[in-house]
Length: 359
Length: 275
Image (cartoon, rainbow over all chains, first blue to last red; front, side, top):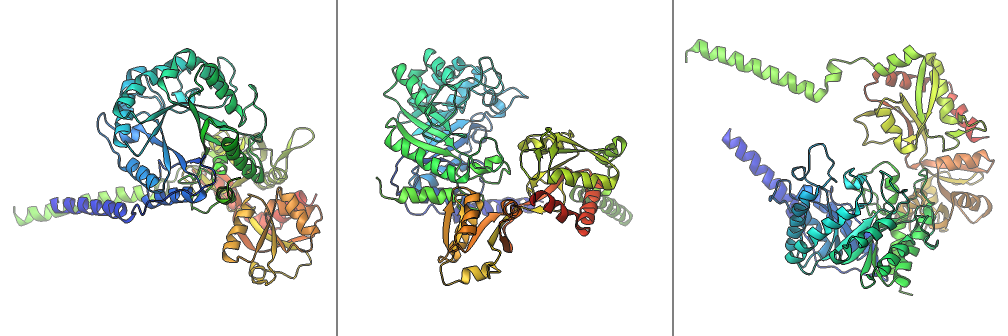
């Protein structure tokens, strides 16, 4: 029995080592692009095969995008208090760096040990903010020199993303206040991104969420400015073209300008903005979708706007580069590359735009 | 240990092994197959005399609302014809497209008929019928064109011009063909209608890559187009049913075969596309 057990363990180690070792990092690459603000949100969290991680990131580089946003779930990486598993994060970050990509790390996803039973993995009580901060600090320390940008939480203005607790900007600011100094102490080079608010026109008192403009203003009123370095913005276009003017009662790409105005009004104009989610969808039946031809034109125009009109925007990262598997819903029509890596026309058109000489 | 005791132990081990194999066999093969459960969906349908169909009536000509706000279309007629063969009526439940399968799994409806593409990943809780309509990408030419296959098109020495809707799946398939045959010129248009009209009106345009729904709609309007060759990117529409509704699944399979054999599916297609 002992011999069989040793054989099975040995075989498992050999298989793991084989698959790890057969995907070499390869030579250092650089991104060739006419627009240094092009970015995409990759979805490598559940991509288990190293060659697919590498190939996804190669294709991002070949498209001409120097930036990626990637999700690093706390619950995957610290399954028990103080026990870390960095294997997957190492793969993603090492391959991204080798492809010449700058990684913006999105942090969230609460492990079971840090939340009450029956809650979702997006539920985090104030008593565990310190644990979250310690984890992010560990992450920042481990990837010093490899990661410079970290987003604290995702869309905290939505009930769903706030673990179905009442949405509370003050509580999010408390989270920032506790996490920020821990991360800075671990790695002073890290730039903390806050916000990443969902663009929404939810009415006051809605259980679904809180208007992103109101939420950001409340964050400032609660003293958030001292606890983040860059504002993360989500800028979906839905039906609208990217040049449609911003308005408080409209969700469109230029809503970003309203969020920027709130930053300026609160004396925070020296900080930059990173658009960490954005995009149009070309599903033939989804009510918020546009035509495929519009999606291409709008996407390229959005990158142009960031480059030519918005000096305060560092990058626009479109949702989503590729999924590990088909969602078989409208979500599939946000992607640039199919799950089998076949490039969609939008990928090839952005690539053509990025390869054209800068105007 | 005596010889008798050794034999006794062997029998016990053998019996234990058999028990383990049976348990594993049930696990692998499926409890349902060894101890078939009754089809409660079918029983309820029979008891109520009604087949509850979930559909999103926003995709003509498969499903839409008529002037009185009632659902109509290819899928509604298909459901009605199938139900008629079972002596049942249909009840149409309007549900958003992305919530249809959730409603099915929650038992709010008995089946989904809503131009629903087959999903090879969602087969644990949902079972699908055989395809009743192929909506995938086809190569189409003018009715009078001598070209009869994709191979003929790609073998042309005159750099054939192929119209596509920019950014669509047809465009993606076109770029795939272009990688294999660089001589193909893809001519991109902002809408599928513009691409179709270009093929009809511009004699220098050789072919068109378009989904079968658009193609049939354009044929229905009298445009002289014909598909050639096989489907180049499949997108079959199927009926979704609860995984445990084994009798319903068998009944749907047989009835679809009957409708196919009697050319009823073709008549249905003609009725809704050739309006």
